[in-house]
Length: 108
Image (cartoon, rainbow, N blue to C red; front, side, top):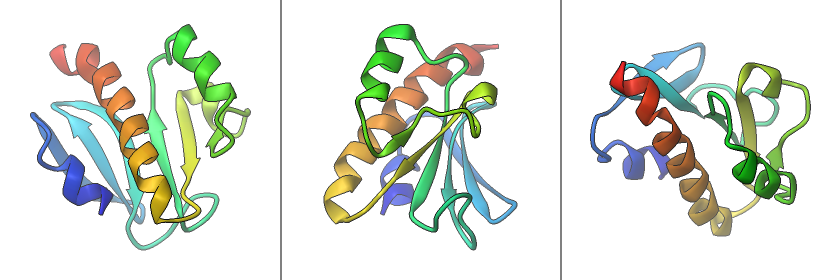
């Protein structure tokens, strides 16, 4: 469902790697969706921020489905856990934040 939504955003391409579908805005990666495997759980997606803006990070720390811990965030990656179909809307919102953040990297 998430890929079907995101693949129609301007300048987005999807590439399969390591059991995921990596999402790119031009040349800048902004997320990864599980394809044949998950990273921490089968129902988590990955978001890439380079770096995450401070105001957004404050919001992220209040989001229980978003891992802002040290597992991957030191590399700019954050995982978002989907527990039910109701979480899809928020997952799309976070993917959009990462997509917008990738705009600078995509312009290079």
